[in-house]
Image (cartoon, rainbow, N blue to C red; front, side, top):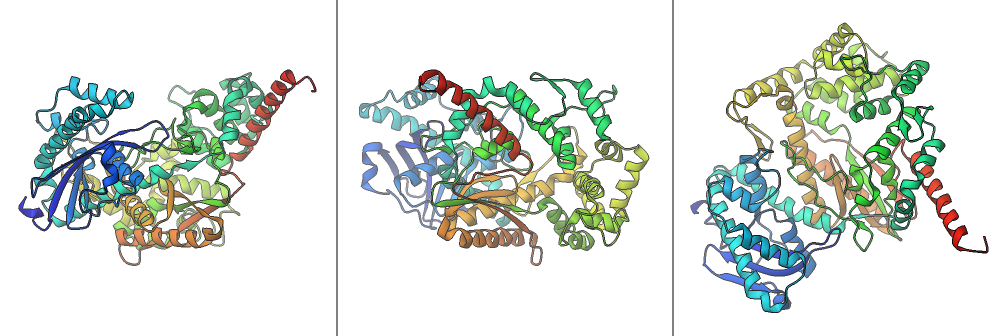
Length: 589
């Protein structure tokens, strides 16, 4: 461990804890082993009051595996967090990124895939079941501490195996330490959770199934529903009557995938948006899947590093931001507080412009609206045009700009816009002519990746094509935008939480935060400053991304643009159903 000789202590550690859905962790026991001195710390739950058994200052390195829950135990007990942390999960994840064999952060699976001998699964399952079921007493302390220590010893084996990789250069090691900081940030964020209006949610849950029919009747969906059944023939007539172009499959039938509906809803809004929300609500949404703690907070595992680009992938069914947009109106700040949603504006375009050093693309990004700016540059929109004067042209330009970030072909653009292939080719060519530096750079990156050369983000999240694997050039082309965006989100999450800002959750390229009403404006300003700083650290001096903020003060609820009407309809219907119930049980009605 010569490369780590600057640390006075190197602690490998693991906690056992009870993790009820939606609730903060309840620590049960801790084991830590110092690779420098050989000291072993074993603490049972009755001994936590004795204080922190080691220094967590910067001269001590802490090592864990998938440590969000472990770090939450520090927070619950009020212990200071480690200042230097390595979480082995994302480091192993990069080396073993194979969705079939390594889907979830399992220490045993990681060890096996690295060729290490692991503990007996039966012993591990028995110990875990004992903790989950709470069927243990203080008399079981030695048994569970032994189990915990075996996990620590296995973590040491994994660390020794991965050590030469993560310490082969200073930039890679810095990226490793950033991801360790992010583990601490996520522990804070998951402990905060998202505040919900549980009274309204429970009312909707109570009457959800019986109210679906009335919701469809009350909401303007253009008559495409028969009861709760979507009729494609009616929808086709509606599109024809409203003169709305719609992509089709090779068979000639309408493309009814949710991604298509989402894109068309952004362009056309109104009835199309309503239909999309209703389709999602009726076919996929289960309100009772939301994980809510006793304090009314939506707390879930946020699925860090779930994608090949390092983005989070939380459960859509359990996470309030993963469900239908209208259901996000169940988010409501606590009394005396406000929440705000702060996102990087057109983050991926900013990253593309900065990394490629395409001055024209950066200039258009810094304009009032990048999609309108492209339209003007390409001659699609007149020089005095704006997004309000040319909304349809701007929508078309937005589709083209976003599609070119991941290398969509002229055929794909034509299909998405429901235009002829020649028109799609012309739009793609206009983008290439408008931003030639970007297109040259992105082609070079994709070609390098396809040849097996590693693609790396600024903080060394790496993608390397496996031998004989199928090459997806579009995925490689988009890697730097998504991967650097994930780096930016991780860095900002660390900076925000370390500054004491209460982050409720990250949402792709945004954060939902909360603050007391008296401090709300000051907290928003600090958040925007930090998010801008994080972008400039990643992209380089002068490349500072823009931010947008949406503020919700108690007693108001969160409202997603274009989806609030459906929430209002839902609550009107379920309130009426509740009134009928009350009338049934109350003779005075």
